[in-house]
Amino acid sequence: MEEESEEQGRRIGRGELWIKVHKKNDGSYMNEEARAIGERIEEIEQQDESSRVLSQNDSIAQVFGKEKPGRVRGVGFGPTPTQLFGSNSRAPGNIVEEEETQRKLCALEAELESEKLKRKAMEDEAAVDKKKMQAMERAMIYLFQRQGEELPGDIAVGMSSVE
Image (tube, rainbow, N blue to C red; front, top):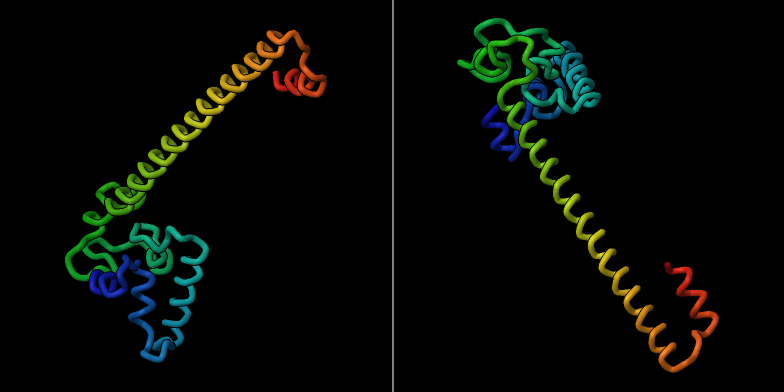
């Protein structure tokens, strides 16, 4: 799985690896049983993107059932279900999955905070612009009054609609 991930330049799941291992060079499956299983894996992964990530409920686990103690399909010799998924069988996913979820959560929180700051800056800028407009209106009214003239009707109507 690690070798294939390095070759592909991305992490691949157990389902994708199972399909690759059970296909011939021409892209056809080794036999009918492999084709049926491969199609079921593809169907599960198309319906639920999260089933591609190594977990207790990924596409391989859904097709073949719960892992037996002492081994995990598709990850080579050594790793056990407890090592990959934790000792609590009710715990969702594994450490890698939880770290990825935490990373995504942090990124979303940072994005939300950034959007809040942008919105506040826009609101502050709008408030400053409104104060500038009000000051310009007062200055214009003052200048007209100093000259002893009334504001032209169209300008007076426009200024009253701004307030």
